[in-house]
Image 1 (tube, one colour):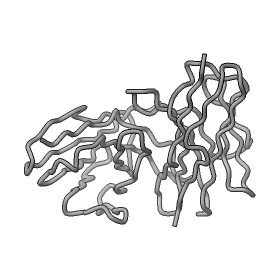
Image 2: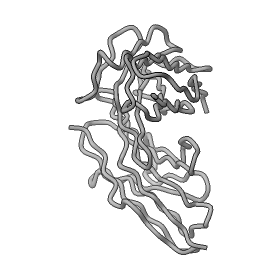
Image 3: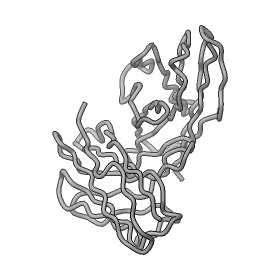
Image 4: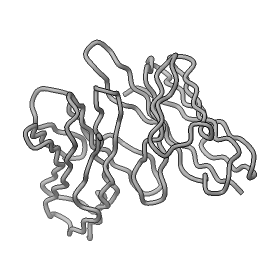
Length: 113
Length: 118
């Protein structure tokens, strides 16, 4: 079955620390990959996406992600987090075969000032 | 990016009644729409995938007779929660995508609908 797994349920960091959130997906042919952020009380916002080409993609707010096809991974990174990055982060995979958009469990990021 | 409008933003209904939620793609044709349910502090659980002009595909465990999905046009999909019960109270989110020759485009999300059944 098609599935998406995020390794970290809750991550707590101090400001200026580096961030890496893991995301793995099950094989299912051609995929499009996304990271979304959800701030408290707000709806989803797209951070970045990968469709094809350079596997290192840059998104908004200093976030980037690397697609490693051999590992079925799409990890999210940020060199230096800020308190305002406190939010829930979701990895999502759109499987072209079958056309399903599946979300990971989400990772809650808490950044201490 | 493209705009997906979901209506209503919130609704309170009595137990046993039905509620219809609309999802519209405002500036693009959405051949595929996804319906999700999100519980507090949890992820988005895919309920069903609807393709324009055909029956929706429901995920395992989702009652298709309770959650009626209609995707009658390339810009509108509706989710009707029939005979609602308090346990149906949740946040429902729709997403729209367009499948071209090159595959699916990005998925755009509606604002979500907070359903409370009393």
